Length: 268
Image 1 (cartoon, rainbow, N blue to C red):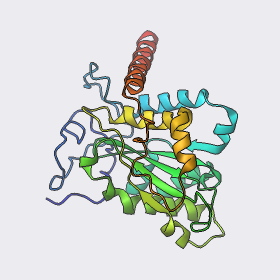
Image 2 (image 1 turned 135 degrees about the horizontal axis):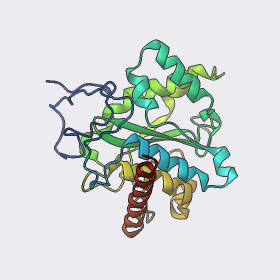
Image 3 (image 1 turned 120 degrees about the horizontal axis):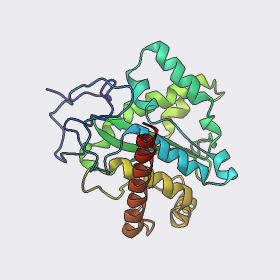
């Protein structure tokens, strides 16, 4: 059976069944099984597997991250809800319009960096919209570009290209930009090599990537020195990735999960 060309409808991550993080085989001939869910969560979930994040914990953690950045970054950066991308790709025209309206309020074409979590086929990845506040694709030093960061390259992140451009084009048209729509087609979409997961911690990697954009001075230097004619193929391999730092970050996410679970249990 051929693989589908877009995210599985209404089931971004199946926590009860097999997903791409659980088996690191190539998915060239396998179609995921659909399960309906508005928000990734499961009462059957193995609570000892703290590496595997649901969308509820993911969104709570990124909200917490945002509380600890300065006001300048809050103005220059933005992030989308973890279900918007998948919902847009699979939604009816009416639901698409609502998602685009929400996205329009974030004014991504006036932001330096916008983080778009993607949860498809039981796997998390991160789309980063860089310098969308620069609308000239050829003359500016940094120029707008898109980076798709995937901690499991065996899933072939390039398969998302058409869906990504369709989503960004929809936001662009909703904002009623003055530039030609061909502007979107000229924006480079790159797939940098990033640290690879060993288990099911793809969601933690996505949070770590966002955290690095917000706080890593080494990564900031890498980004600052990149020119439009240079690619980001080694984005986290220029000395900006510290395995020990990642392990500490993973433990922090685990601790956050425990605290949230304890808080919920106390309320019950």
